Length: 270
Image (cartoon, rainbow, N blue to C red):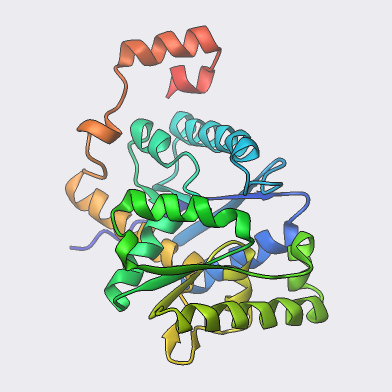
């Protein structure tokens, strides 16, 4: 008999919950569009995130907040999976070390899924500064040879991404740039395209899932379905992550010591 219990997903963006409300709402809509009956997707942002996260310096401050949210989930319980819905894999290793529920990553799921749909895939980045970080991530997956190119959106209103969901004129500007970026990617051999950042929710809003015969992944929806699958397998097998090598959990004694020294109650109480 199948397990039909409800599924509750913590769905973590880096977007500021005050500055990027429209983007967060559009992501919630994209997630809800594909969620199975009984799946509750709780899209969360951060206090000040996605402000210069293309630079590693600022990105590391966002990572700490994601870790804190993961520890809160660990302490309080109530969630069946933690979904990292940001394309830079913030806190992926850290959370897999400490959480005993599936931790699902935007970029990991999208890249490996793209490899099942075509020989080579492309990434569409919010701006050029993201490109080295994205390429580092793909190399870390061991599939750099499947990445045809990483294209940056040349969007004059890069600081106004939130407005693409409320101002049709600004949205049309982004659409023109997304189409141009996709066409460059296709010319360089892409058979599948992964949009990242607010553009992923924007393409769902515009109902554009293919250009010139090349699939445009519904990235935010895809990770919901991946999380549902991982939760189902966790319930069926009791296993969700390897505890050898990379994702080995710290010893309980060390967890308690670090919780005390660093003053992290959520670490101690989980």
